[in-house]
Image 1 (cartoon, rainbow, N blue to C red):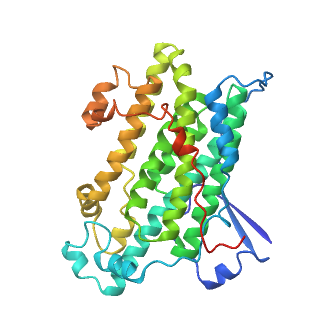
Image 2 (cartoon, helix red, strand yellow; image 1 turned 120 degrees about the horizontal axis):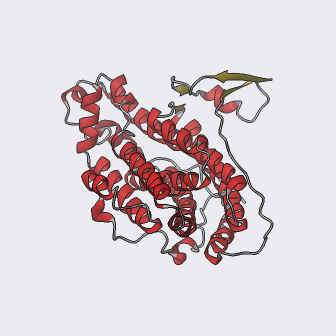
Image 3 (cartoon, rainbow, N blue to C red; image 1 turned 135 degrees about the vertical axis):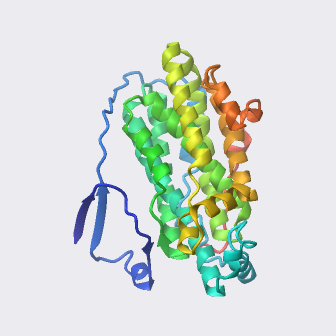
Amino acid sequence: MLNVNVVEGPPTEVQVFDEDDLAHRLTDHDVEVIREIFRTPLTGSYNWDYEAANSRIRRLYELGKRFNWNAELDVDWSQAIPADAAAAAAQEGPEGFAQHPKWQKLSPEQKREFAARSQAQTLSQFLHGEQGALMVASQLVSCAPTHDAKLYAASQTFDEARHVEVFHRYLMERCRMIYPINPNLKFLLDKVLTDERWDLKFIGMQILIEGLALAAFQTIKEQTKDPVLRDVLELVMRDEGRHVAFGVNYLEDWIRSLPEEEIEERAQFAYEACVVMRNRLVSTTVAEEFGFTTEEALEINNASQGGAAFRKFLFERMIPNLKRVGLLTEKVRPKFEELGVLEFEDLQNDGMIDWATLEAPLKKKTGIAA
């Protein structure tokens, strides 16, 4: 039986799953659908010219067709986390917490729970962000102005569906819990989903949110000891690399054709989104559950190597891309300078596509039934 519950905002409680939940995943049982409604003045368009006009976009589209990996077949879910790695993670805790007096007062069981919940909280944001990306990509199918862009947006929609699927499975089977969406991530997604301008959707999703995702995935991939999570992130990052390359290549000509006032509006939006990503996407929920104050949790994160690595990965990719598409304007440059991120502006951007990396064959995992 399908139970539909329409709510005014996202859930605020942590979902916890036990063996019964996993056992009934693929059986007939009551399902509650929790819906939050949003409205957008989306203007769609037909395109009656079916010829390929952009060879790079078409090539990216072909890559999307070729590398449609399957979460059921291309991930070996039987791989175990090394026992010593799991024990070490529980003892040390998330980076930066181990030396704090409040951490020392936690019992071994509390430390294990802290570490597990911290990972679940982070990966839950990946899941929620991928749902937002799924919906934005589906909007772009309707509102993108050219045939090439519609085809690519359709392939990206399928990519995002796989990402939702694979992160949900990981959270269900490995973490056994899902945390609510970070309010600031929800703010960014709502802004992109409800804006009527198709090119702002491109900027918000392909340049900003996908860039955010790549930085977060790369940070976690370098830290995790779980081979399953590492494999999942490798597959997802391949897709995200194509998505960002698509956005940069498609937007650069369009942005420069706009009136200066409209360019500045989009540049300001990009700057404000970057401020949110840099300063406000840090979750303190788990730390607060274990007695840390919000201020203590933020201070620990800001001083951690992981937090610094995330910010570096984020802006060394995003700033060159914004410059390439024409959104690092003279009016917003001083604002980005105050953020301390202009040092990255001359690094390689995603308009300069690394075809060898994107076209590399998928790694075949051993131990997976055909």
